[in-house]
Image 1 (cartoon, rainbow, N blue to C red):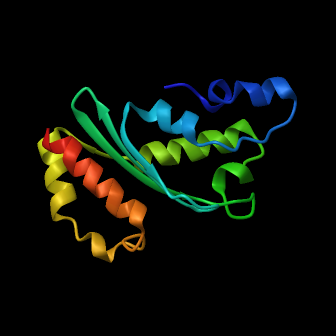
Image 2: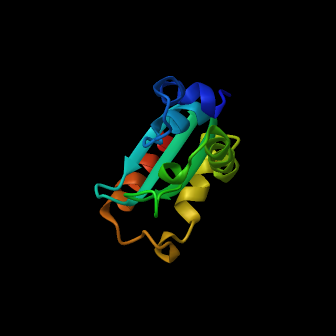
Image 3: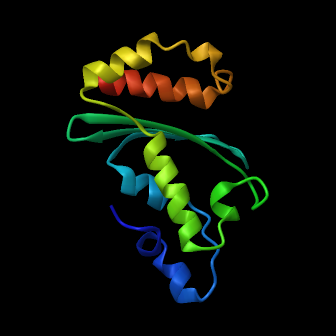
Length: 133
């Protein structure tokens, strides 16, 4: 896995540090099969990975400024690396599509804070369709 300094090399080359996009981290964790992001200035990203049959699930929140967004608050590559490591550790992995499908079908999603969001329901539908193939 690449390190933060490699993923955000343009920040190093520019002489300033101001990383704003999580996508390089998301893509580095694995092969994105489904991704649904909230369509707002702050919210959540929901990602389903498929790394050759090993399925991963990551859900994380982000904000609109350095006061409420973890990546924008980073002022060094070391801080971004810590954030990346945390995102990797927060990714829940399953050994098969069947195991992941069982998780997604049996989890009580209504207990999650984002249940009300249309994006959450859209993500769950796309995940179930993907894992049922």
